[in-house]
Structure formats: structure tokens, C-alpha cells
Image (tube, rainbow, N blue to C red; front, side, top):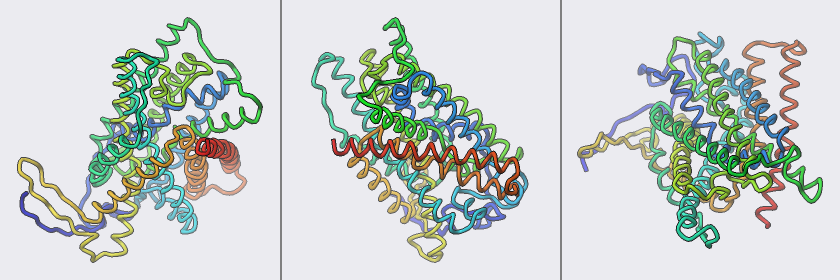
Length: 466
């Protein structure tokens, strides 16, 4: 190993200020609408897409597609409101950049709201890491089972555990988590976005081929029949939670917007990127959800590509699951980097003279670029990955966990805070037409959140006790 040299760096990640870097060094943003699209698609199309066929099966042929379109529309509206909050006081030329969701809440709504928001944000980001961990394990197990069924026959007892796969994914994320920040992740997001397109196309194609093979479209207007109305409502509520998990990305929107170069104004670029990405993701969601339900009807699995509705061609199922794994490696980082930035900012402000917090050590390795290591980053990020892996091992319930996380975070993070910040940014007075419309919009979304959360918690408890 080469020599070690020590250097001092100011904050690991800057906070909002009138300058681009608190260290005083010029910082060049190079992001474009294409890189923003890659980041958004990586963040949005993830574990959630795999549960949409199951959600469609619970809601039926009318309510299912309508719910997906409704959530897409809500996401477009809320992201558009949030894009205007990146610069302050003017959304296009304001001198202050707001680089994270919680910082925006503090600036526009005050310290108390920031503390409440911070709890939801960190829980949401942490929950995404847990979800991505056990989803990756499911996909790796599905590859093993697919090959086993191909060799031994579809009735073979091909049983494999998830724990070792979760540990493997955790080990990979310990390494990947040493990526400094969003500005160094464009390549990872591009790869992850390509993977998301690949497995979405495969899921759509397999569902379409299965419908052709069946010779008819399965399913019904009412969805999967149940023994009683209460069971039907629980499943429908959980399906709403799963769909809610699949869409919003408000907590990483400002972090992505902070990578964009200007001109043109960042809010305009981000609005366009958001709209295009939601159109793309909704198209894939409808294709995967509708054709998955059409192919399997009442027997639609909870996870379209790991629930083994499909057995052949086995190599294509393996490829789809491999693409999911590669995508989730990047998706985990998209949702973890804001947590890393938040914690490292706090330590930097709290201990500005600490070498443990601020010093970087450069290792000169033969035949490789210099490796820069920060002890705080190494320790905290490793502990974070270990904890998400441990929780995923304890609660490996795909549909139920997705539903709880989606419903719990949908209204406060995707609706309430963006709407309230928009009121302050645009100085919208009470009881004006826009105020009434947005308040009504927020209230309706709150009702959906409550319904989805109740159903998903019931499902999680039943799965754990069962």
C-alpha cells in the first residue's frame, strides 16, 4: 500500500447558503435533464414496481389502473410545488440554495416543523434501505429457484433461505456507501436506470406472453374474491399503501436538483425531468401491473418476478432478477446518501476541529486512483448498512412492509410539507382559490394515507404472527 497523507476538509456536504461551498472553493454543477431523469427513475422505479400486479389484483380492473394514474398525477403536482422551493427567496434567481428536504422545511416552516419532518424523512430513507435489502435477497433466491426448477422440474422442492443473500447485499453496500455524495453518483444512477428499464420490459413481456398463452385476460372488475368484506377492505387498503410506496420521491428531489447546472433555471429543468420520469414510470407500472394481473388473475403473486408465476424461459427470469439486483444496488445509495449527508453535516458543525470528523486520508494504491478515506464516513456508513441488513432479516415481508412505508410517508412527505412550503414561497393567502384547492388536495391525500396505513399494519401483524 502506498503512503498515507492527511488533509483537512470543511463540511462533507454543504448546507444551504448564498455561496456554493462553505469552504469557499468554487463548485461546478454539471447535471442535466438526462442525469436528473436517471436519478429520478433510479429512485422511483424500485421494489415498488414488483408489487403492482398484486395491487391490481386486489383492486380490480377499474380501481387498479385509476389508482395508479391518480398517484402519478399527485406525484407530478407535489414535485412541481417542491421544485420551486430549491432557491430562496425567488425560485429562479434566489441567492440561497436549499440542498435537502429537511433544510427546506426549516427555512420555510421553522424549527418545529423541521424536527417532525426530519423524523419522517430519516425513517423513510432508512425504510427504503431495508426494503431494498430483502427485495435483493428475494431476487437472488429467485435466480436459484428458477435454475432448480429448470433442472428438477416445476414440482421440485427448491427451497432456499434469504439471510445469506441479505448479508451479501449488505457487504456490497458497505463498499458502495463510501461514494462521497450525489455529485459522484451519475454513473451509478445511469446504470441503475438502464436496469430498471430492462426488468420492467421483461416483466411486461412475460406478462404479455402469458396472456397470449392463456388465450384470455384473467381478472375481474372487483378483484380477488375474499371470504368476507373485512378481508377485502384490508387487502384493498394494503394495495393502496403498496402503490403509494411506488411513486413519491420528494425526499430526494432537492438533492437531485442541487446537481443541475444553470442556466436554464434549475426549477424548470427539474419540473421537466419530473414530468417525463413520471410519465415513463407510469407507463411501465401500468404495463407490469395490468399484464401481470391479466396473466394470473386471482393467483397473481405478491412479487411478479420472484413469486413464480413464471417458470420459463428460465434464463430470462434470471436476467430480470439480475437487473433488479443491479438496480437496487444503485437505488439503495440514492436513498442512503441523504442520510449520510445529514449525519455528516451535523457532526461537522458540532465538531469543527475534530480530526475524526473532518480529516481525510489519501492512500496511494498501485495501478489504481488514490483512495480518500474519512474515518467518520467509514464508521457511520458501515454501521448504517449493518443495521438495515439486520432489520431486513427480522422483517422480510415484501408487500406488507412496502405498504406500511408507502402509506406512512405518503401524506407528510409527498403532500403536506411541499404544499405548506409552496404557500410560503408564493405568499399565498388563506381562503384564496389556490389555497382552497391545495388544502382540499392535501386533505384527500391524508384520507388515503390513513386508509392505506391501517390496512398495511394489519397485514404486517398478520404476516408476523402467522
